[in-house]
Length: 234
Ligand SMILES: [Zn+2]
Image (cartoon, rainbow, N blue to C red):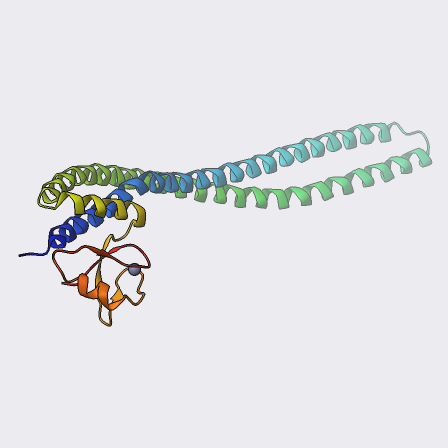
């Protein structure tokens, strides 16, 4: 007669495939949100680049206005200078105008630095935009593939569950129940082979000789004394 564990080992193989499949299905939403989080990161970088560029533009505009107002002041001083009645007054305007002109030169130097920063900022924004656009397109594809994979796996899961149910019908009900109980507890194997040297194939502890012998006997179902998994010695 064939050993009753043989058909249960076949069920175990199917259960292991089912578990793997269910894990993959379960992980898909996480994979999707990881991908979306990456996109959010790139969008955030673009946001920062735009803010920085905006800030440079505002500062530059402020300095330009400041230069304009200083130039107006010079014009005013020059008009007043022409109306100066004494040499002292005249010289005082020359001095004032010189001070304002130095201020203008100073601001214009800063403007050059700001304009360079603005050019750099524009390049960074363009790069961020390009990256984000590329990622958006790639991500749409990836998300679509994951959705397709999820429905493919779900379909496979239904077929495999039906197949597993058919195999379970071939098994001894009491042993199957025992198997299910252990499998729910251990999550990897409920039935393990006796390894060479008489070790449990689950926890690898040395089994008593009686257990390794009984594991061969089709009329007996024995469990490892250490981990509780059913041991089989075909
Ligand atoms: Zn064991």
